[in-house]
Image (cartoon, rainbow, N blue to C red; front, side, top):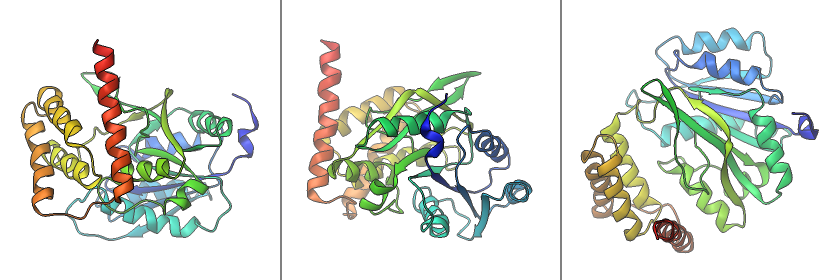
Length: 294
């Protein structure tokens, strides 16, 4: 693909911890991009394997790749710890000249023209604030695309326009950050989406780091914190019980996560207007599904 996207400047920030099995695939994917980032900051969050050694080998050859190290508790805390690490990396490049910022996980394999094609999408639509492709995970030796709502961009490889990123105040270092950013962006007039024709491969399935039970509980907590509707929650739990992992228990654990947060009266991460917007967005999804069944 040849176009003026080569003039677009983007930077990447990648939190990483214990990814020795996958990090090299990700690094090779970025080095092979037809439009490379102007800077890539990889933030190691106290890895205990060979992750750092692998990154350092590439940093010596590619000056636009920077490694910084941080420390945190050994217990894995998805969301908060990941974005705290991201924010430390962003501090290094926030004053750089750039048009787009990418939050990139280090357990991915990406096609060489992925970012060039995605930047072309941004070029065509000045209202597009957040976007990604879709991601595939391996199941029984087959790569299957993970279904996402139309307005959602995959958190593992999320691109934000600089103006949008700054307007929403960056990422909130809590669980559900990759839903909150989209709610805030849309409430500020930006469009958010993913493109089915752009694909990347998630080499480590979701939940591998903390386990499927904790992942389902976390999803329930996130749903509460983002102010989702009760109607959508009902259908979501039923769907998770039938099709989720593990069967039945997945939905129950999601409900547990939501109810626990409700009982503890945790502070929601969106204001009343944003919560109202999100409820409306979710209820519209239900109506579309019902229309498809009729």
